[in-house]
Image (cartoon, rainbow, N blue to C red):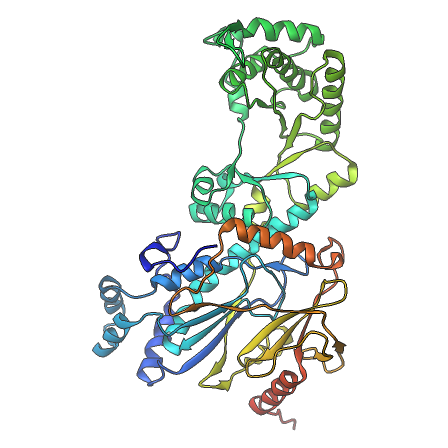
Length: 538
């Protein structure tokens, strides 16, 4: 973690993230607030979501660091104002002076820690401050939280499906929704539980492990051994150069593989000459079991004789469970026959993988060590949007409520403090919303927890641990600590381990309880009754 950063050092990752990256109606509202003398009214907004994505019962909160970077640089330049003047020539001159002077020095932001497991109705972020500024943060905050949280959640679900010991690499750059979608997906897939990325720019920028092998085009670009520009390879621990091509051909004869593609063998030899310490080959260009694996093993045996240890293979098509088992059998057979340490060579699988395929592979039984996942991960193909909202819950100390005939869209009014209450097994039991001016829940003290809208649902709990979910992260400037991406990733993993398994299981997960105190329940229902007109029936 790091301390407070100076304004010029703490910038958004994307140059498009400025005060102008907003919906036009945010500006028209701001002008109306100013015109009505309400710009400096003290507002409280909650950023939350109403329903967990992907049919699950949990969400990973991500994007906070980028929100704070945006708040840090918030403001309108002379160029911005010039452009807005052209759009709204009828606005009063003094408003432009107001807009040029706007900053976030009077804004406070409270938030969950990035990487936290979050649940519907519980604000991930609370913004307090002058109405004019707080309103202008809405669209950009939502943009900076919605997709990151969706991708991080998708990644976490893939991690759970694959299992804790498998390596996961994000391979989605070429299928992502544009450059920013690609960069964001790589970052937040890592936060959600992936180990590496193929995205060179994202790996360097975010200090994420980079992984990649070669494409089918590399293999098919070779026709025969005559295209190799050298036959030699130096031994691992000396300067002696050996006829590596001849050595590979001899090993292939010993394997008694008669159906191998010669161009594929040439490609593998060329790749091994380039990367003798990291030889991992894509083996399904022609025939995985009859050509690809024997060619790989021939080159690997030759490398072994020169003191190098091959890494493994990648499968990108076919019945991955079956092929991985058959490949492992060949590795074990060769290990025994040639007394080489090939039993545990890495098997990587790709090929349009998703969460359901990972579960299917587990059910079938497989020998895959690492997965490369692209399209379904970075595009969140199963659900393309999270649906976070940013709702006004208090103005000048008066609670506000958004009412809807759809109960899921009703907001919980007032400035609230969220807490996570833990039971005897040190697992979260429920999240409790408490009015800001009320006492915090206390360990060991019995608390009545009410469903926000269903009067029949209520429970008592004597928490064994009470965790405040919000901390002050911005108070006119960033408030330390600021967590690194690696720390957010580790926190996400620890959060998922703490949650009961039935909340994160694949089929029919148990909904997690989100409750309010008796005081907030009464407050909510009284406000509802006072604000909503009573219908009259003739």
